[in-house]
Amino acid sequence: MHRPSVLAAASVLALTMAAGPSLAQETLRIGASVDGRLESGDATAPRDEYRYDDYRFQARAGQRLEAIMRSNAFDSYLEIYADGAQGDPLASDDDGLGDGVHARLRFTPEADGTYVLRARNYSGLDTGAYSLSLRERPRPPRAPRPGAIRKGAEVSGEITERDPEQDDGGRYDAYALGAAAGERFEVTLNADDFDPLVRVGRMNGPDFVELAYNDDAGGGGLNSRLIFTAPTAGEYIIRATALSDDGTGDYTLGLNEAPPPPPSKPITLDETVRGTLEEDTAMNDDGARADVYRFTGVAGQRIAVEMKSSDFDTYLTLRDASDMSELASDDDGAGDGTNSRLAHVLEVDGVYLIEARAFSDGTGDSTLTVTETPPPPPPSAAVFGETIQGEIGEDDPLDDSGRRYDAYVFTGVEGQRVQAIMRSGDFDAYLEIGAASDDFEALASDDDGLAEGTDSRLNFTVTEAGDYVVRASPLGSSGEGLYSIEFVDRGPEPKPGSLLIGSTARGTLSEADAMTVEGAYYDAYRFQAKAEEKLRLTLVSNAFDAVVEVGEDEAGADFDVLASDDDSLSDTHARLDWTAPEDGWFVVRARSYGPNETGPYALTVERQP
Image (tube, rainbow, N blue to C red):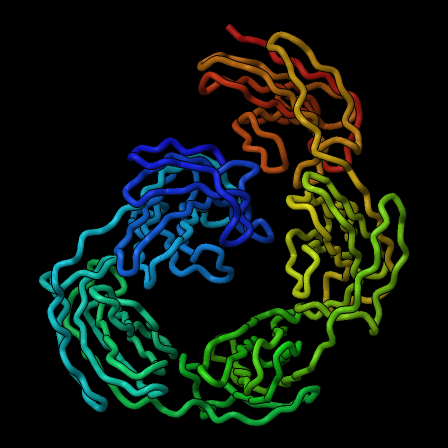
């Protein structure tokens, strides 16, 4: 992460890890702004879902905070975590500024402490510059006291420009009601003038803390219907508002006792039951027809639930019966079409509920199976430089998607490049790698990376020393048969060489070279250029289809390409005319167009008039 330039009077220090797998953190004082940059080498989420920088800050309980992130290089996204905490963020925002790709996150801490502000892209590994600010918002003007509403009542109102404004935009009317712990109620909001949105929450000083919301009730249409269960006794606030910030007009708000949840039927582990969704099947709190099953589990128990139907697209949800919180859900996890499969490790002793329903409004027959899955067996040792023969069969463990697999473990060091190649004539090969732990989470995966059909080649660079597990499996849940797997230690990532403008570099692409995510080998060279300097980069090879790329002074698989060329010189030779955008060091890559191509080449960088 580039050291940010501080625009306000805030010191910026490199710190150690905290929330999530961040590589490093910076401190950010409330009231400060920074210019930062997402780049290769910054922390990434599991499976390379996004790239991010983390900033630590101190905050007081009740302090009204606003973070704004802007970037013209990627879609900005902001999250806040408690320092050192794992799991879901305390708050997040994508497009809160309302202008497409810039984020605005408003957050009020419930306790004094240290928090982490995560500045990230929305998805993928985009890089580029961004600006980030963190400030304290002034106390809002005192909102009008909420109106009162009681169960069984229906009130009419109007959203106007004179009504108070929410933190995230849009006008609202508020209503208060008292509820006992565990009390369930139904809120409906109907409007013809705007798309209604109903929100339920509690007040934290002057701030509204949302607990639940609904935009569109099940069954079509834009009206809202929310079933809510009060977690504790006290006063709750219902907000009637519009989905869009400019929505105004008349509405009708109703409050009623919620219908009872769908009745649950007992099911035992390792049992298969048949169910039927019909027009008169009871609806869940989201307005979807659902069969509900209950079972008793114990902490640490591993369970798997599978639902199949030839009549509709299935959907599964696992809930804790004590508070109806969602623990896991799945749509098509069975790996073969529209059937569902979820796996979960139970955290506490207690009763659990399974909702079995259609993804949309489908009806018809289905089967549901709940099984207790044993812990995965210890992985075998991965031996670098040797080819291992294996077989996937009925006795192998199942992963969360219902695929059987064999597992191999190795100890890696930071910066080490590891390659696994899996071949099979019996099934489509699939590879995953993750840190060795009780709950496997894939950090990278590959299906057909060898580019020779259905065989896999997984390349992975170790970011932190430790033990890693490679899972070898079929791509589909029904695959079985023989396979071979080879583990290759490719050593550390090669560093770019140097190249003077006006000279020619002659080299050879080999299997020991760096590799793009597409599996193409490349050599990299650093060179220095001045702003507006016009250059011609030529790559010639009679051994492979040449591609020349130029980018910022960064190496690695996440190279930020500024310009590239494939066949401008001929069908297989590349020539790129390029103008340096600024003074500085840049990197040119000499690479092949396709995977697995090697051989000699000549690379020339020349000035142009």
